[in-house]
Image 1 (spheres, rainbow, N blue to C red):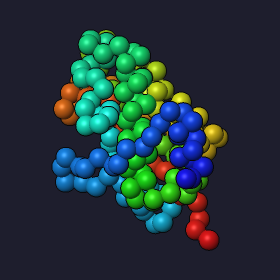
Image 2 (cartoon, one colour):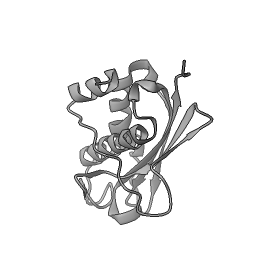
Image 3 (cartoon, rainbow, N blue to C red):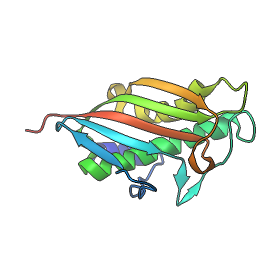
Length: 157
């Protein structure tokens, strides 16, 4: 078991298999052998969304954070799909979080902290990343959160 997967397990996380795309894309793409672009992932666990709806309406801030945590777990599963070993990660470069938001809801950064905090817990300093947390009026399938990320890989020996 990789060091990163051991840390995930200590955090109570078992990675699922990468979700099958619902449209014409792949879970993740390795670019120039050093960067991985991970497609947007929602908050499904065992095939079901943790919550549905919008933050500030039918989904609470704490529920939104849990959704962001699950979305980043799904991103890590998609990453593992392409690189097979999470110990190859040099650093998390960027996280882009989308939050389905009711009018007037402006706490998107706190929602996406659910993802960022897990990345820092698991990857340490290498988990600190650039980030955007954007509010939007709708997300596919009623998911309250969708996250994508960019990851830098270690040089292969």
